[in-house]
Image 1 (cartoon, rainbow, N blue to C red):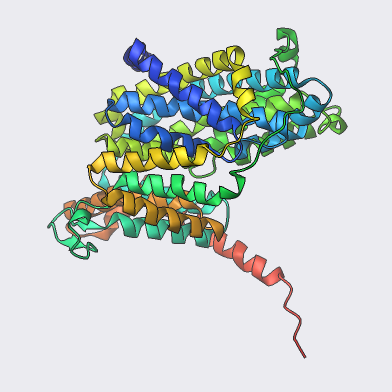
Image 2 (image 1 turned 90 degrees about the horizontal axis):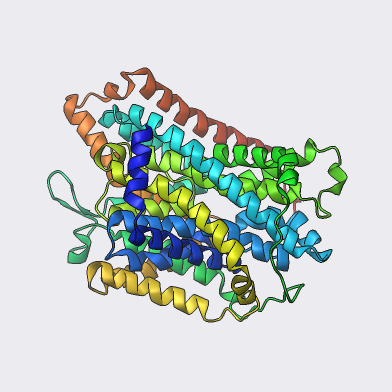
Amino acid sequence: MFEDILMGFGQVLNVYNLSMIFVGTALGILVGALPGLSSPMAMIVLLPLTYSFSGLSALLMMMGAYVGTKLGGSYSAILLRTPGTPAAACTVLDGHPMALQGKAAQALGYATMGSTLGGLTGWLVASLCIPVIAGIAVKSGPADIALIGLAGLVMVSSFIRGSMLKGLMGMLLGLLLSTVGLDPQDATPRMTFDVQELFGGIDFSAALVGFFGIAVVLSDLHRITENATRIQKKVALAFPPVWELCQRWRAIAIGAFYGLFVGAVPGVGAEGSTWLAYATVRKNSKNPETFGTGNPDGILAPESSNNAVTGGTMLPMLTLGLPGDGSTAIMLGALLLHGMTPGITLVKESPEMVYGLLAGLGIAHVFMFLLGTLAIRPYIILLQNDRAWIFPFVLIMAMVGCFAGANNAFPVFLAILFGILGYLMESRGFPIPTVVLGVILGPIIEVNLRLALSLSNDNWLVFTETWFRKALIVLVLYIVIKEIVLELQKTRHQPLPNPTV
């Protein structure tokens, strides 16, 4: 185990890879600090820049952006009462009141320390658990891989915001898109409509850019002329003393626990963990009435949870090929774009990638702390500027990335089409990550499903031969039946419309 972790650090500790992490983290803090942007958007901007990089270097830059946005979101949450990212919404409750009291520097200090300590805790747990999980996962057969992929799709559809029905519809759309192209066994064209560019399947970069880039820009066009006004003209950073952090260890530990636990559940992301951590800390506080008025625990708990999620999401992503949130879904797509297959076999086939990413996760949190400490003023100054230039920049970079990936304009048109489709789906409550996950996992599930049936002479009972497979089937059925019952209960308790006379 420790040899593998040391191997990961050996892969990362060179000037080139460290610079990739540094640049990604710096961009992540910037994007996270600007309301209306998000971690997936930062990674979409970086995607075209990584085509000429090695797979590990590309993913390390994205890892830095993933980590950086977690802290950046707290800047605008504290200073502007407008969270830069959805996960930072909870930080507003106590961070902004503390800033209104003239203690913005202290609030930013608590946020920085909470993010750093929570993130490093998540990294440590992930580093210890992933080798164990991976050691079990590599022994799985094709039937196990197919069922794990199916269970992941159902779990994401169930746990992600909105109704499970809409989540399943998004998942099915993604699976449908994943079947476009030549059949992997007999090379029969499927839903290509005689378009030669579709024979190779849907371009992953077009799907990622469309659903996570263009769709988000279209959704946030109303923010393009917004200017932010800080409550303090000069803001520095004031760290709490060590003895105070030791006294408040419960808030940090609770936040890290929820971040790890919730992050490890595919599809949930950081938003739920921050509110759970905040509610738990407030409930167990001796002075719960002080929360919402500038209590430091109200900053430490959500920020610790916010960054611990990054370690939690690595558990399903690196061992099972299941994303914990939209950002890790893009990382899975980037793995495919760089010629690697996410899932159970990733650790066996590319151990340098898995343990290199783990090492990069820890280093990114160190860079996040250094950047937050030494370069906080430039980031905060940018909060006051007009952001009209940002969305065009994102669109240009996204289009360049689509064109560069295939060296023709067809993926660009696909990305625009997916962007419009994603915008329409998002505006009606359909979760976009389920679509992208279906596109990513669809080929993996199909290949392993057909391989399992081929090895068992088309015997479908092969999917119930072991207790693990039976447990996965029971889990899927339980989630589906539970969601159906909940939807029926909601419908039953809804008041009937008044009849018109």
